[in-house]
Amino acid sequence: MSERETIITVSHLVKKFGDFTANDDLNFEVYKGEIFGFLGANGAGKTTAIKILCGLSKPTSGNATIAGFDVYTQKDDIKNSIGYMSQKFSLYEDLTVTENIRFFAGIYGMTRKDIKIKTQQLLAKLELEDSAKKLIKDLPLGWRQKLAFSIAIVHSPKIVFLDEPTGGVDPITRRQFWNQIYEAAAEGVTVFVTTHYMDEAEYCDRVSIMVDGKIAALDTPQGLKQTFEAESMNEVFIKLARVAVNN
Amino acid sequence: MRTILFILQKEFLQIRRNRAMIPIIFIAPIIQLFIMVNAATLEMKNISICIVDNDLSSTSRQLTNKFSSSPFFKVTGNTFDMNEARLQIESNKAQMVLNIPAGFEKRLVRENKAEVQMLFNAINGTVAGIGNAYANQIMMGYNREVIAKWIGISKNMPTMKTIEPIPSFWYNPDMNYKIYMVPAILVILVTIMGMLLASMNIVREKEMGTIEQINVTPIKKIHFVIGKLVPFYLIALFMLSFGLTIGKLVFNVPFVGNLGMLFAVACVYLLTVQGIGLLISNSANTQQQAMFVSFFFMIVFIMMSGIFTPTDSMPQWAQIINYFNPIAYFMKLIRMILLKGSEFHDIYKDFMILLGYGVVMITLAVMRYKKVSN
Image 1: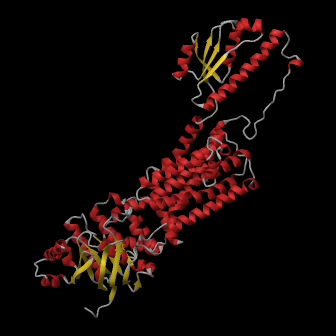
Image 2: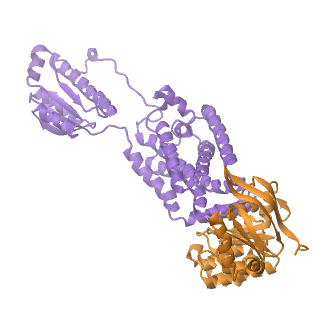
Image 3: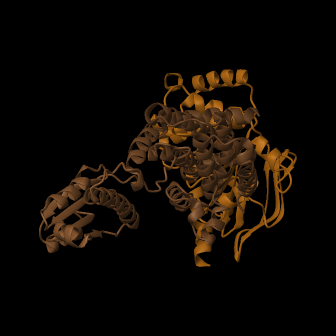
């Protein structure tokens, strides 16, 4: 593994809000093109960490580089190299499918001509040609999520952050969504994903599990199951999370 | 620059799709102008008067006729009982009572003087004061006629001439209150668009969660703010033109001054207003909060702006507050330009203050606007 190219490096990262330590000395690396699962119970500090990695929030101490850019000083470069899709719905509901694609592609600096080509490609791939002129609010949730993911990587970012991307969608759509993730990873996009679905954790190349602001475990799903003598990721998670509760 | 164009395109699409916006842009000016201008008048007509004539002589009847034929008064009651008349005032049926006691004519003939009583409902001091002035004028006119009649000389006799000032009312010769109010309503409309709707629009992105998505993009905050404010800036200017057109066509508001200069003032004014709107949106998390805070400022600013009462007659402390009231400047300047035809050198000082204010507010707001949390 170690000979692979790292794209995210986090060392001794700390984030405090007053007395509360949301991220306590995080250390990890993410390799180019891998699907990195970022797990943790609610309130474990996942969202705080993602915000720092996306350049939305400054760490209290420690270092992190994203695609070679420093989180303290090169926020704009980071923002140009990443895509982001949040648990909250992030498309404009009162704009059509095409208008959403055009807007997000446009603000990432794509030319009008490229946007047109890309829009056609996206619509064809998602089989949304007939709905191109529909408003987002008139689309079913599953379609919106798939479109939101496609738009998050419309500008071909090096890394895409997915913050609980599949919340509230049915299993079939989740499966399709993960196919999209695999496709993106195959094209070389690094995927950094948080989720509460443990079956999804099994799809990841490597998984980290956060407990109380610390990374309690980090390995391949296979490795984790062996270490914790568990049948499934679900069991691994519960074993680790129980430690947190007992504390 | 390209980024701003993409944001503007998105904003205009969203504004067009917002069902409330088209009515606000087109219907609100019409309704506000028609209702407020016609209703909010200080012109006193039809002051209801209750007449208590216990004399019932030809002289007393002449006097009451003077009141009933005046356009300012409307006789709403006739009684012989003062208690009844007082009840009318108490129940708001009459704003004024004219009491002519029995023996009025007799006393006038025998003693050369007689008394009448006038009572006013002064719960609204202005109405009572103006009513009193009108009534006094009628009494004085009547007095002269009586004197002329009893002395037996023609009222056209040169000796009867008194000093009579003939006022000439500048800038609004017909004392038409409507053309005074139309510019004021336009100020309010422009302010609502620039402050309230702009701030609500920005907060809407927070409410919908899309601001998070915007924040992870390389959009610079200045681009985002410009993209958010420019549409409302333009719509506000459009509403001003639309309102001016209605003002001209329906209310025949004179455009004495230079319209280009008026728009220059509006452009500068909008900077301040949008700056305040942006500051509000910065601290508000929901559209409701933004609306309440905007309304608070707008109501205070509007009430103190001289919309109804001249700012010059306000107490010193209020005038000091008005130095910081952008609406007061625009209210003053729009009337000066439209009705008075003021030139640039007349408004130079206020214009420069407004410009400085605008630059400071918008800079402050943009600087304080946070794209990055913590």
